[in-house]
Figure 1 (cartoon, rainbow, N blue to C red):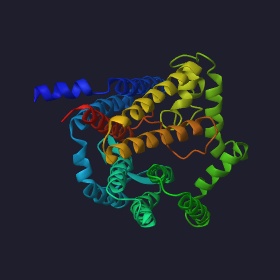
Figure 2: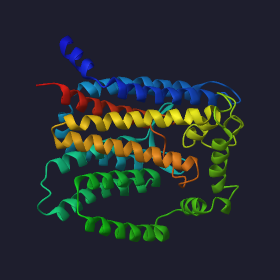
Figure 3: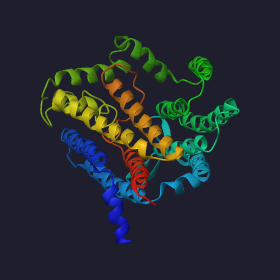
Figure 4: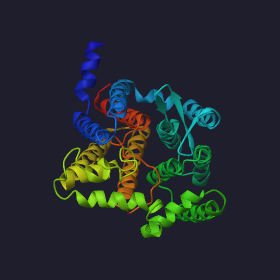
Length: 368
């Protein structure tokens, strides 16, 4: 047993782990900085984040040791479990900012949809690794689409438009990697236009419409929906090259920037640590992506390949949307910055995802 652990540690990708560790370190530093602006400094959020970070790294190493093939075998059961949990949160969950998407246990809350991303990734990787695309590709496209549609509908009922967008994007990334013909993507594009049009009139709440209108014209409602974007842009622009210093960001410390530790933590980093700090965030993400993609040539099964590519796509699109929100390129849809934003569920799911990636990397190196 001890020798096996040594083998796992030897084949563990420590560079990838270090990139994640540094991103998480930025998270803790900035959450501590934001806490300093509170009237009564009790460091509760900072302490909670430390708890989830420690738990997350423990889970990372546990999942790295577990053979990822077991996850493939239980993918259908995980899918059913995920659907049941999403259904349960609609009836028994707690509502925060108009979204019924949390279970609370004392002072700690868990958001199931964060873990659904991993379940869906496992399900899609297993589904497309076990079929032959040469025959009836449309059938497999529709079957996978129906599977994800169930999750999307349950998430939209919360309602959580941002998470539903991520789930849909994850499916699109996987089918893009699988290699469907161009005509299927044209059909998907037309369907998305029809769905968006119908949702605008039938599903979207007024605040969601306002966010889209504000994205197209931030000055449309500068004191309400446009306020967040405007303050984030000011924070990013005021940081300069080296920033104002930890705890000295005027937008975050004086509470001009809403949700500073969640949606807009990148703006806080850019304001307090400047272009250099923001550049380090990009550098650590680039290292993370590079190490994940570099290992693909050693993986000899489609499930592992699809999972890592899907995981990279999932982390990238969340990073892209969050940073895009912070600099005014994308509408505010409530997407956190992986490994950096405050939030126990997002931190745990991201670190578990890294643990599974490490499990795939380890077993690609071990000569059975």
